[in-house]
Length: 326
Image (cartoon, rainbow, N blue to C red):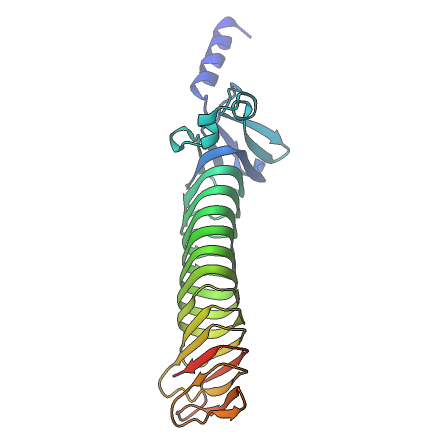
């Protein structure tokens, strides 16, 4: 190689420092691992995927590129955190969090960071995200999303594909989801709007509010509030001591077993829904034309609401809970 060619090569490599590009066909997955990062997904029609924010200097706190076959690993050099024990670094100041942007062609992405964020629009490949503390914000995506956020916030909107959110304490908002899903949330809140699919929810001390749902909701609730508005489909589950309220559209079903708390059901006018209710030690409130049968402390109701045809069903079994249907 001539001296001029060598100088030009070095100049080209220097100009490209901080960014790499690879053919989409050569990438099976991008894996980002580190202490903290701000990950941005910015797709565009292209046969190359570009990764910005990488650094081959090996400096503490920077991200280097390592290739294992078709898996591209973007790994943080964490020596500053582990060796020097920098207090400022351990606190994870947002101003210091490196930014990693994945642009161009779309490929599956996995993120494993302790602190940080993942944001993106119109990403059409599978995402697997794991953060101890941070934020996930995705819009108009396609494909499966698997988000594990121990503490923080998750916002996903206008998405087509399976969604799984697993968190100990988070503010979760899922809007316009077309596909099956699962949410596991100990505390915090869950707001769901315009879902279509089969969903499984496990909540303990969180506040849940679902609106405009088409499909089936299976749930396990502890002591938190659980509210469903405008459900067309089926709601079934188990409740410990929380307050469960459900507003059902015509041709919908509810099947709940509860230990305590309250079960409140509102049906569409003229639904003719069939009722099968029983509580061992609680109370039952139904329209006056239905009879509450009392046997000791036990109360039960079997009958049908007013309506020309049966267009719904409500089944509740309670130990020490109040059941109301209207």
